[in-house]
Length: 248
Ligand SMILES: Cc1cc2nc3c(=O)[nH]c(=O)nc-3n(C[C@H](O)[C@H](O)[C@H](O)COP(=O)(O)O)c2cc1C
Image 1 (spheres, rainbow, N blue to C red):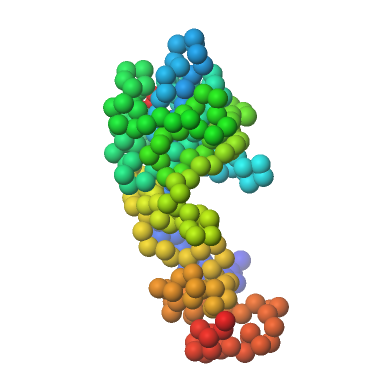
Image 2 (cartoon, protein in one colour):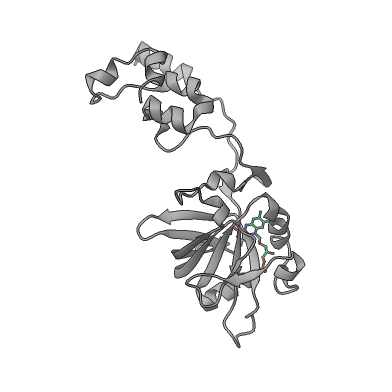
C-alpha cells in the first residue's frame, strides 16, 4: 500500500542519524557529591567517613527526598545501613580534588577527612553522620528505604535539614547557588558550571523578567517569547523589541 506522501517526506526528514550504543548509565550531566557518614558506636565502623557518589538524584518534593545508589561492597554502605543517616555535601571547585580522592580510596584503609584536610562538623538533625565544614551546602538525610537493584543498593532518604554557607545568601536571604561554583560530572569527567542559559520558565517569561534575570541574554530571549493566549491584549500588542524591553 502506498504511503501517505506527506508522511513519507516527514519520515525521511527525521530518519535516524544516530549510532546505537550498548544500554548504559549514560545520563549526563549528573551531580557529583561527597557523602559523609558514620556507623554506630561499637559496630566496628563508627569513624567519620566520606564516599563520592554520582548516582544521586532528587526523587520527591513534599516531603523533600533524594536517592543515592551505593554498592554493597563500599565501607560507607555498612555505615549508612547501620545509622540510616548520611549528609550530602555539594561539591564546589575547591572540593573537587578531595571528591575525586574520596572516590578512589576506602575508609577501610584510611581516614579520608584527615587525608583531605577536611573538617567533620555536627550536621543539623543528624545523630551520627557529620557534615563537611568546607562544603557550600549540605543536606542532612534520613534513610527511609533501601532497595537492592543489582550492582547497587538504592537508598531513599528524606532531607531533614539544609545548611548553607552565609556567603551564598544575598541581602534578602535568597539562596544564590549560582555563586557556589558547583561541579558537574559527565561520562567520567568533571566540569565547572559556567554560563547562565535560562531559568525555570524563562521560555514564557515576560520581557521585564527576562531583562532583570538574564540581562546578558536579553536579545536572544526576546525572539523566543511566544505570547500566551490568555495574555491581556495590552501585552499582545507589545510587538517590537523596544516596547518589550520597556514593559515594566
Ligand atoms: C566520580 C565518582 C563517582 C562515584 N559514584 C559512586 C556511586 O554513585 N556509587 C558508589 O557506590 N560508588 C561510587 N563511586 C566509588 C566510591 O566513591 C569509591 O568506591 C569509594 O572509595 C568508596 O569508599 P568507601 O569504601 O569508604 O565507602 C564513585 C567514584 C567516583 C570517583
